[in-house]
Amino acid sequence: DHFGLEETYMMKYGFPDCKRHQREHMTFRQKFKEFRETGLDREDKVGSDLLSLLVDWIMKHIMGTDKEVAKFLARKGVK
Image (tube, rainbow, N blue to C red; front, top):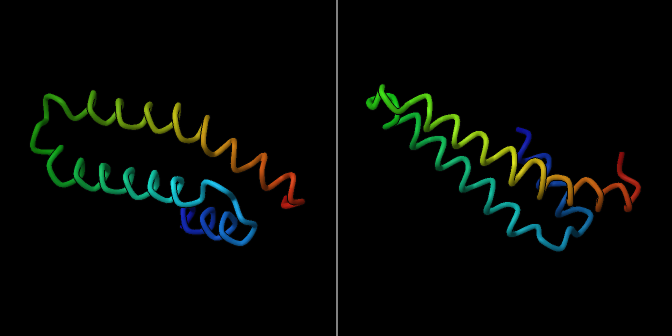
């Protein structure tokens, strides 16, 4: 999976915040799993809750943490 591949590269090349990044992945997976298991029972909030989860993930993780990893790996010569 995407997270696994990303984590493999971080470990292989010694990304300093690898453990924190892995925890972010684990937290996202757990939140998404909980949403799938319980969110669908709350039809009135499904759209807004899912949107909030995804916007938060995109803004904080993808636009923040993932960019740090990409820069780090680029400096290591990984393409």
